[in-house]
Length: 388
Image (cartoon, rainbow, N blue to C red; front, side, top):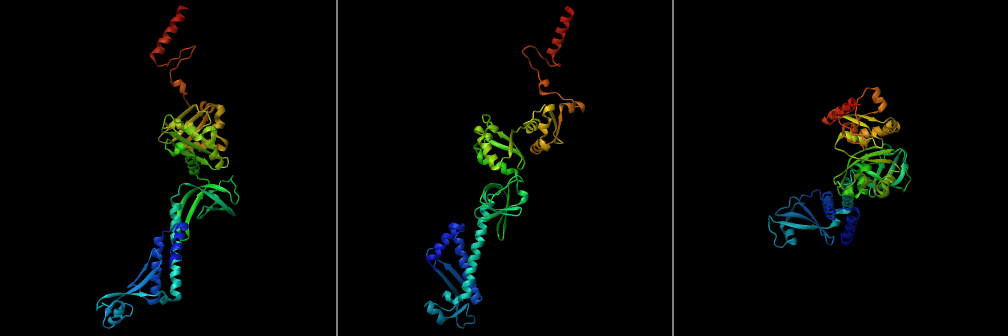
């Protein structure tokens, strides 16, 4: 071994991201393996590799004895003094072994051990790299279409986008660059196994996190998200700063931010709504763009009754129930939507928000029927009638 080895290890460390020290240790172990194959024992053998020059030394430690019974572990005093002139009985001397003593088979064995270690460390390195990207978005290049599966190049490793994780409305061509959500990374004997998805709801979440600076800064939070892949996504957002509009931040100037995400999702529609602590308000918001007149929630049963104007019923439910379904997933409520007419037919009593509050019109005064002001108002009306 020489400087060429050092250069090779430097290159491996750079390209494969494998520690050079790990490779040195693998080489030392491989030489010990070669010794075992040649001599049958390695307990008294040592290997050292110079980290600067690449030169290696393999030596065996032998005990100085009067009569040699084991050539592998013992040495006579006469032979020992050829190595160390001061050697005496009972001393341990180190005798260097030339690599040619290993033979061709032993050398090949050592080489295979090194190559195996390199592959092993490369697999570990790749697993470490991609395990850190688990639950995140990466860019991949479409390589080829294998039946219903798509082979994706992620740079240092390939992944398969299975039919289940594909959006039915999307189609790709080889060399096309696409965004993928890494669902899970597992370590295998053949390297990391990476499960990727285009249908996962967190793909949308991560795309917004990458696109919106306020989310990156923690000012705006994505509190909940529901998705029908390829069709529509509903996302509830909240601002930790009263001066920052969470919806506006996600939409961006002239829709720049949301349009960038929509483009990555090949035209999927995205509804961004305001998240509320109040469950009733949150359910109301979740049915956007429909107008809601009344919401009643059962906190224990996680059920919500919603009343909408007659002309808003189809909008609230959505095509094939999509809007209502996404709202239910978003809020984690089972939502029963009724029009005003349906609510009246069912005998459902409810009061709109303005009927619960006192307010004044420019032309007429309105009072709460249970208030003292209302009683006075009624008395005054009666007096007028009597006077007439």
